[in-house]
Image (cartoon, rainbow, N blue to C red; front, side, top):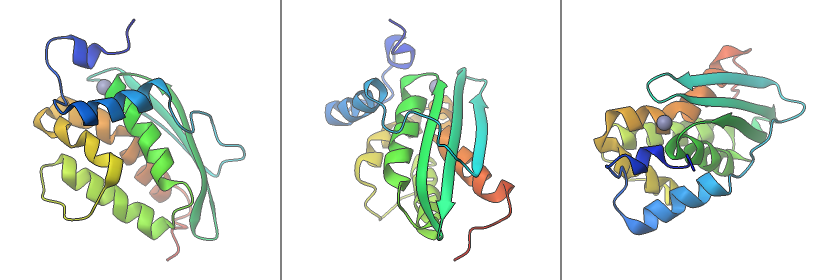
Length: 156
Ligand code: ZN
């Protein structure tokens, strides 16, 4: 079972049992794990340091994320993060989605974040491991790239 290279090789990026359960649940039962059809944004992202691959697609309607999904493979952190992203951003206004993405990235960079990030806080523990931070932020960076890459239609 390759399901946990990150955690099996002797260090545990997340040492809180509850948070680890949240991450593993998203890894084993990923939400929105399918390509969105039709999609108006499509981003392939990879993290060569770990071998993670994320293929993110989403559709924007009326200034909101109407549908978002991913496919790909990689470590538990990257896949769980992608699942959490899709769950969090579905139905969200783009401005809110961008703000949440920025807060999430700030949290992983070690900044103090006062906003309540809910289950996303489960990934906070990876910030001590720079390589794992890249795993966790991969899908979020892909989302921002998708927003900025096409038509700039992030109308407020
Ligand atoms: Zn990874």
